[in-house]
Every structure is written in structure tokens, then in C-alpha cells.
Length: 356
Image (spheres, rainbow, N blue to C red):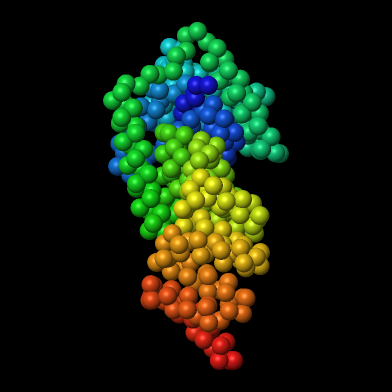
């Protein structure tokens, strides 16, 4: 099915409404029915008006989020509304006013458009705003079906150069988001990964790395959804199986986590991180023999993996094998002398051996 590009025109004072609408559009994005865009997708270095004009011109559906501020805005009224209506008149796009707040919107040039919700009651006036947005989504689905059935509608065709430019932009943005994530600027990274996915909804790398950024924000449900989306696109993406396992472990869903790690290892039996993470999950289930086997497998693949030596030492200590545990911790400390955790564990094991 063709994905319809949706342009959302709104006033900044209605940002909370736009965010709610984006949440309700998630099912359409997940189905790849739409790709949604608003000026929040513009990132540093992109020319503001040029980006807006580009996306207005290629949108198949344009949503005008109507409020008193939107109507009072000279820019929105003379630029975005005018361009939207030109696209509508040329049958290149459908334009739908979405009534957010009470406003005198039934004036030219948008008074002839059919608004949502259909009862013409603005969303703010509804006791249940979720119900109001559901009515909007139903109307959008119908508009998309009509648009696709129209003999005059044809999705904008991109030239090879435009496709290359988009791929270059996707790669550049992912690299920028990765840099921010590695610098622990997770909120900024998440915004850019989401901008990437508005350009390329099937980027498994963007879905996976978005999940990692969300994971480090403690947003485990959202992270899991991102990893699962990556795996819907590429079921053999070992990094996504491993990352999904970590997020499930963080929620205490150890059986599901173990299944994810084992799936990663089924695809790549020599994946040390997955063996290590599998061992940790088994350790937390008190399955020390199996955990030890997993940590030893890591060290067969990579003998210089300090965390695996540390984890193996912990599992051996829980079996009362203090001599072997101390030996593993000494290797971990030698490989990573800066780790206070490894030094502390080694000290504790030596004290326990002395009977302290």
C-alpha cells in the first residue's frame, strides 16, 4: 500500500494538541498508511521555509489545526493555508480542518472544507478528548481511502537524485542522533531519530537506535515497541533481538528476555554480547550452571571481555567457588583497572575467603 504523506499545519500555542494528534496517528504510521510531518521535524541546519514548502508540495493530506491563534497568524493564513488550498484545488491533496478550539473558522477560504470532528464541536470542548481524536482518525482514514481511489491522485514521484538526497539526509541525521545519544543527550537524540523515521519509516537502524535512546530514558515500553518495529521489518536483526532482551530484562520479564537473547544467538551463535546478557538473565533466575556456561561461551569468543569475567566470578561465588571467582575478578580488574565495581567485587570475595 502507498504511504500518504500527511502535512500538519498548526500554531505553536497548540503544540499540546499536535502531540496528542501524533499519538493517535500512530496506528496509521505503524500500518505504513501515512508518513506524518510538521515543523517539529525540522532540525538544526535545515532551512525553515524551504522544508515546509517541500513537504507541503508533496503531501497527499494536509491537516489544518484550527484555533484562534492559527486563524490570527498571518503566516499560517497567507502561506500554509493558501498553499494547501492550491494543492486541494489541483486535486493533488486533500485538506481537512481539524477543530481544536472555538474559533471563527467558517469564513473564506476554508469555510467550504469539511472539518473534523464531523459534529463541528472543537476537541477542547469534548469531555473525553481521546474520543474526539478517535473521530478525527476515523475521518482521516476515510479521506485517505477516497484519495487513493481518486483517478486524479498520483503520489509524487521522486527522481533518483531526490532519493539519493533523502538517503544522504537519513544517514546524516542518524549519525547526528547517534552522537547525541552517545553524549547522553537522549531527549534530543529521540527527536532526531523520530525525524529520520518520518523520512524513512522502514529504517531498522533508526528504530533500533531510537529504542536504545528510549531505554536509557527509562521508557521501557516505548523502547520495546521500537525494537519490535525493527524486527517486524527485519526479523534477523540480531542487535534488535539483543536490545529487546535487555529492555524486557529491565522490566523483570526474564523468560521473554531469555527468548530474545536465544533468538539473537540462533541467528549469530558467536555474538558475545547476547551470550553475556543471556547469562545475566539466567543468573537472576538462580540458574547458575546455565549462567556460567553462557559466560564461559563469551570468553571462548572474546577472552578479553572484562564484564564476562566479572559476571562469571559472581556466578562462581554463588556456587561457593571462591578461588575460581577471585581468579576471574583479578582478570576483570587487569583488563579494566578503572572499574570500581570489579575492584569492589574482588575485595569482597577476598574478604569472604578470609572469613570477614
